Length: 282
Ligand code: NAD
Image (spheres, protein in one colour):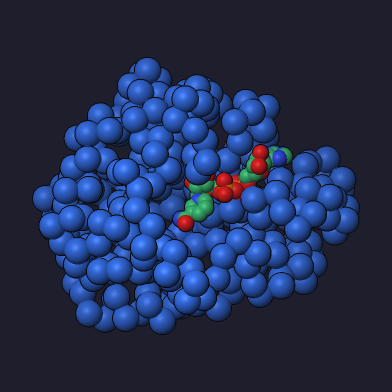
């Protein structure tokens, strides 16, 4: 496993396991399998409603706590200082942990400045080793940095071969924010697994399309958290450290960029309305 060192010195694995949309009743098995496959970074969120299952898997896995890197996230409805602290306590309880490694603001909506102040306090108190954000476009990221004390350690944003985010990456580099990709396999959309360019490079290396796309992100310095409930695919997605894409292959993959998302548009008022008014039992 390779690692990156965050802007506060905390060391984070470069490949982790995401649990979005894995139902609570399957998530324990999936995380146990992922730990068995060698994953040490687990990415969950309060709104995924599977933190308890992640916690049970971590407890059952018997891996030393300091070898694990657990990420969770605060949802929009718990924006603001007091609500974020209470939401954090609930997440910690569900996970059965006494600290988390990385706590993220899930979305740049609602009172996320209040949330950030709470997270700065949690960080200073040692309850969270690193704090960061997710889905922040560069303008929101820079504004948050300018008006607060702690610079986010991570920004987790949709990033894959079809939506490469080079401009976002440049801003993150400038401010020392680690780029983390969600949806590194394009969530299987847009013909990802059948893409002829990726398939050709995969054949040349005797690898899978998934491995090529993950390797491409890693060579750009991006942390990846692919998801699968199948142990064979978990093993495949973490087996990406013993080959290298050439400069020419990196450049050819760069031509796949469409500059946009099929998943969601954070500038769409309808999305802001949905995210600001939908309530979850979390
Ligand atoms: P992903 O890009 O990891 O794709 C997952 C899909 O690819 C699944 O359908 C899976 O069955 C398939 N797959 C995985 N490995 C495969 C392989 N080797 N061969 C063939 N098919 C394979 O999508 P994702 O789960 O949405 O993203 C990964 C993680 O990112 C999530 O689980 C979650 O932790 C995080 N995430 C965060 C946000 C956010 O707003 N912060 C949003 C979405 C996802």
